[in-house]
Length: 195
Image (cartoon, rainbow, N blue to C red; front, side, top):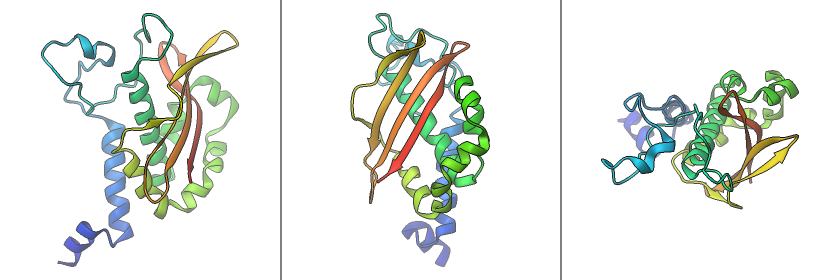
């Protein structure tokens, strides 16, 4: 009975951590049921009236948009969700290898995995409080402070997505940037603040 109460009312930090980790892991690993899931062609599928958000494809080898004026909403949503999930997993497990290995060559040429972990040390030392907030963020849709956009730096197109998840007791703010490496969008900038 005590275990059921802990599960329902969340009185055990170990149980909360385990649940948060399971949520983060399931989102980070994605669903394998839709092997042909293609975010770029979601609107072209006449068999479905609603887009699915249960799988996140991180292989973005399709054009961003026909007019290149603004990033495709499904791709931005998947990148933001995936990056947040990888960050939450890194904090929960204290292992930044997945987040680091999925980052851009430019990020990896600037920072080591240990430097990345050191920057977010305060999150790791506070993970009992932070992990449930990040787990909640993964169940929410982000609110963008400005519409996702592109900027150009040294001839490279960079996708910018800044916003927040309206988590309680404090919002989770993020500033993400992505750059294409070998036909895939990869994380270039990662700033997360819970305040």
